[in-house]
Amino acid sequence: MKNTEWSAGRWSTEPEHVEVDDDGMRVTAVEGSDAWRITSYGFIHDNAHALLAPLKQTAAVEVSFELNFSEQFDQAGVFLRVSDTEWIKAGVEWSDGEAHLGAVVTRGESDWSLGSTSGWAGRTVTMRASRSGDAITIRARVDEESWRLVRVAPLRAEATVTAGPYCCAPSRAGLVVHFTSWRTTDADTNLHP
Image (cartoon, rainbow, N blue to C red; front, side, top):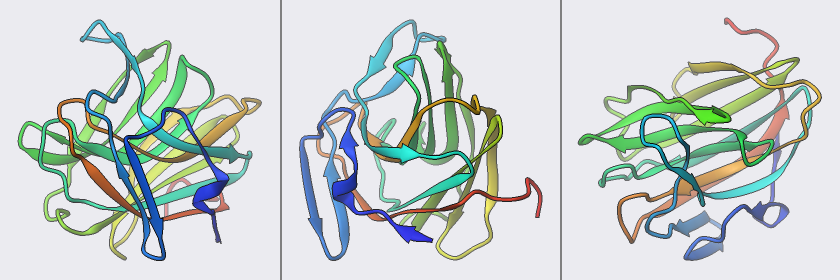
Protein backbone atom coordinates (compact mmCIF):
# COMPACT_ATOMS: atom_id res chain seq x y z
CA MET A 1 0.00 0.00 0.00
CA LYS A 2 1.40 3.38 -1.01
CA ASN A 3 -0.03 6.79 -0.12
CA THR A 4 -0.51 9.11 -3.07
CA GLU A 5 0.32 12.75 -2.46
CA TRP A 6 -2.57 15.11 -3.18
CA SER A 7 -0.14 17.11 -5.33
CA ALA A 8 0.39 14.07 -7.62
CA GLY A 9 -2.99 14.50 -9.29
CA ARG A 10 -4.47 16.96 -11.77
CA TRP A 11 -8.03 18.22 -11.47
CA SER A 12 -10.41 17.31 -14.30
CA THR A 13 -12.36 20.45 -13.30
CA GLU A 14 -11.10 22.83 -10.63
CA PRO A 15 -13.27 22.88 -7.50
CA GLU A 16 -14.36 26.07 -5.78
CA HIS A 17 -11.79 25.63 -3.00
CA VAL A 18 -9.21 23.06 -1.87
CA GLU A 19 -7.49 22.93 1.50
CA VAL A 20 -4.78 20.36 2.26
CA ASP A 21 -3.36 19.78 5.75
CA ASP A 22 -2.10 16.91 7.92
CA ASP A 23 -5.71 15.74 8.30
CA GLY A 24 -6.32 15.23 4.56
CA MET A 25 -7.91 17.30 1.81
CA ARG A 26 -11.14 19.31 2.01
CA VAL A 27 -12.77 20.07 -1.33
CA THR A 28 -15.59 22.56 -1.83
CA ALA A 29 -17.61 21.57 -4.90
CA VAL A 30 -19.01 24.05 -7.38
CA GLU A 31 -22.81 24.12 -7.51
CA GLY A 32 -23.97 22.21 -10.60
CA SER A 33 -20.87 20.00 -10.84
CA ASP A 34 -21.61 16.46 -12.03
CA ALA A 35 -20.60 13.59 -14.33
CA TRP A 36 -23.31 12.03 -16.49
CA ARG A 37 -23.97 11.25 -20.14
CA ILE A 38 -27.41 11.21 -21.74
CA THR A 39 -29.31 8.21 -20.29
CA SER A 40 -32.79 9.05 -18.98
CA TYR A 41 -31.97 12.72 -18.32
CA GLY A 42 -30.90 13.67 -21.85
CA PHE A 43 -27.99 15.89 -20.82
CA ILE A 44 -24.21 15.65 -20.68
CA HIS A 45 -22.41 16.95 -17.59
CA ASP A 46 -18.64 16.66 -17.50
CA ASN A 47 -17.53 18.99 -14.72
CA ALA A 48 -17.11 16.71 -11.70
CA HIS A 49 -14.10 17.52 -9.53
CA ALA A 50 -11.80 14.51 -10.01
CA LEU A 51 -8.17 14.60 -8.88
CA LEU A 52 -6.56 12.13 -11.28
CA ALA A 53 -3.22 10.33 -11.61
CA PRO A 54 -2.22 7.36 -13.81
CA LEU A 55 -3.55 3.92 -12.81
CA LYS A 56 -1.55 1.03 -14.22
CA GLN A 57 -2.82 -2.41 -15.15
CA THR A 58 -2.88 -4.80 -12.12
CA ALA A 59 -3.13 -1.87 -9.68
CA ALA A 60 -5.83 -0.67 -7.32
CA VAL A 61 -6.72 2.82 -6.13
CA GLU A 62 -8.34 3.49 -2.75
CA VAL A 63 -10.00 6.75 -1.71
CA SER A 64 -11.37 7.43 1.79
CA PHE A 65 -13.69 10.26 2.82
CA GLU A 66 -16.03 11.25 5.63
CA LEU A 67 -19.70 10.66 4.81
CA ASN A 68 -21.52 13.86 5.78
CA PHE A 69 -24.00 14.48 2.94
CA SER A 70 -27.41 16.09 3.24
CA GLU A 71 -28.60 17.46 -0.11
CA GLN A 72 -29.93 15.78 -3.25
CA PHE A 73 -27.10 14.24 -5.32
CA ASP A 74 -24.20 15.23 -2.98
CA GLN A 75 -21.54 12.66 -3.86
CA ALA A 76 -17.92 11.56 -3.46
CA GLY A 77 -15.76 8.54 -4.12
CA VAL A 78 -13.31 7.29 -6.71
CA PHE A 79 -13.25 8.30 -10.39
CA LEU A 80 -11.57 6.44 -13.28
CA ARG A 81 -11.25 8.24 -16.59
CA VAL A 82 -10.28 6.89 -20.00
CA SER A 83 -11.82 9.67 -22.11
CA ASP A 84 -14.70 12.16 -22.18
CA THR A 85 -17.04 9.33 -23.13
CA GLU A 86 -15.53 6.41 -21.18
CA TRP A 87 -15.27 6.67 -17.39
CA ILE A 88 -16.47 5.22 -14.08
CA LYS A 89 -17.42 6.96 -10.86
CA ALA A 90 -18.13 4.96 -7.72
CA GLY A 91 -18.94 6.17 -4.25
CA VAL A 92 -21.73 7.39 -2.04
CA GLU A 93 -24.48 9.67 -3.30
CA TRP A 94 -27.33 11.32 -1.42
CA SER A 95 -30.52 10.52 -3.32
CA ASP A 96 -34.14 10.86 -2.29
CA GLY A 97 -33.38 11.61 1.35
CA GLU A 98 -30.67 9.04 2.10
CA ALA A 99 -27.14 8.00 1.23
CA HIS A 100 -26.65 5.21 -1.32
CA LEU A 101 -23.57 3.28 -2.40
CA GLY A 102 -23.30 3.02 -6.14
CA ALA A 103 -21.47 3.29 -9.41
CA VAL A 104 -21.96 4.99 -12.75
CA VAL A 105 -20.29 3.22 -15.66
CA THR A 106 -20.13 5.28 -18.84
CA ARG A 107 -19.30 4.01 -22.31
CA GLY A 108 -20.88 6.66 -24.50
CA GLU A 109 -23.94 6.70 -22.23
CA SER A 110 -24.12 6.38 -18.45
CA ASP A 111 -25.82 3.78 -16.30
CA TRP A 112 -26.40 3.94 -12.52
CA SER A 113 -26.58 1.29 -9.82
CA LEU A 114 -27.43 1.95 -6.15
CA GLY A 115 -27.52 0.07 -2.85
CA SER A 116 -28.27 0.93 0.76
CA THR A 117 -25.68 2.37 3.14
CA SER A 118 -27.76 2.14 6.30
CA GLY A 119 -25.65 3.10 9.31
CA TRP A 120 -22.80 4.68 7.29
CA ALA A 121 -23.61 8.36 7.97
CA GLY A 122 -20.89 10.23 9.86
CA ARG A 123 -18.32 7.48 9.30
CA THR A 124 -15.32 7.03 6.98
CA VAL A 125 -16.04 5.35 3.65
CA THR A 126 -13.28 3.76 1.56
CA MET A 127 -13.81 3.03 -2.13
CA ARG A 128 -11.45 0.63 -3.90
CA ALA A 129 -11.16 0.14 -7.68
CA SER A 130 -8.96 -2.78 -8.79
CA ARG A 131 -7.82 -2.95 -12.40
CA SER A 132 -7.01 -6.39 -13.75
CA GLY A 133 -7.25 -7.77 -17.27
CA ASP A 134 -10.35 -6.45 -19.01
CA ALA A 135 -12.22 -5.49 -15.86
CA ILE A 136 -12.46 -3.06 -12.99
CA THR A 137 -13.69 -4.43 -9.67
CA ILE A 138 -15.18 -1.88 -7.29
CA ARG A 139 -15.45 -2.49 -3.57
CA ALA A 140 -16.41 -0.34 -0.60
CA ARG A 141 -16.31 -0.45 3.16
CA VAL A 142 -17.08 1.78 6.09
CA ASP A 143 -14.42 2.27 8.77
CA GLU A 144 -12.60 -1.07 9.12
CA GLU A 145 -15.58 -3.31 8.31
CA SER A 146 -15.36 -5.99 5.61
CA TRP A 147 -15.16 -5.04 1.95
CA ARG A 148 -18.44 -5.09 0.05
CA LEU A 149 -18.57 -5.79 -3.70
CA VAL A 150 -20.20 -2.88 -5.53
CA ARG A 151 -19.63 -3.58 -9.20
CA VAL A 152 -17.60 -5.47 -11.78
CA ALA A 153 -17.43 -3.56 -15.06
CA PRO A 154 -15.57 -3.89 -18.36
CA LEU A 155 -12.47 -1.77 -18.84
CA ARG A 156 -10.23 -2.34 -21.84
CA ALA A 157 -6.90 -3.87 -20.80
CA GLU A 158 -4.96 -1.58 -23.14
CA ALA A 159 -6.73 1.62 -22.02
CA THR A 160 -4.77 4.51 -20.53
CA VAL A 161 -6.55 5.21 -17.24
CA THR A 162 -6.29 7.98 -14.67
CA ALA A 163 -7.95 7.64 -11.28
CA GLY A 164 -8.40 9.32 -7.93
CA PRO A 165 -10.82 11.02 -5.55
CA TYR A 166 -13.83 12.90 -6.88
CA CYS A 167 -16.80 14.88 -5.62
CA CYS A 168 -19.63 16.92 -7.08
CA ALA A 169 -22.71 18.85 -6.02
CA PRO A 170 -25.28 18.86 -8.82
CA SER A 171 -28.02 20.52 -6.78
CA ARG A 172 -26.45 22.98 -4.36
CA ALA A 173 -23.61 25.23 -3.29
CA GLY A 174 -21.50 24.67 -0.18
CA LEU A 175 -20.74 20.94 -0.29
CA VAL A 176 -17.38 20.32 1.41
CA VAL A 177 -15.96 16.79 1.25
CA HIS A 178 -13.18 15.76 3.62
CA PHE A 179 -10.97 13.17 1.89
CA THR A 180 -8.79 11.42 4.45
CA SER A 181 -6.59 9.30 2.16
CA TRP A 182 -5.65 8.37 -1.40
CA ARG A 183 -3.61 5.18 -1.88
CA THR A 184 -2.49 2.71 -4.52
CA THR A 185 -1.77 -0.96 -4.09
CA ASP A 186 -1.81 -4.22 -6.04
CA ALA A 187 -5.10 -5.17 -7.64
CA ASP A 188 -7.28 -7.71 -5.87
CA THR A 189 -6.31 -11.21 -6.95
CA ASN A 190 -9.77 -12.77 -6.58
CA LEU A 191 -13.28 -11.59 -7.28
CA HIS A 192 -14.63 -13.57 -4.32
CA PRO A 193 -13.07 -13.84 -0.83
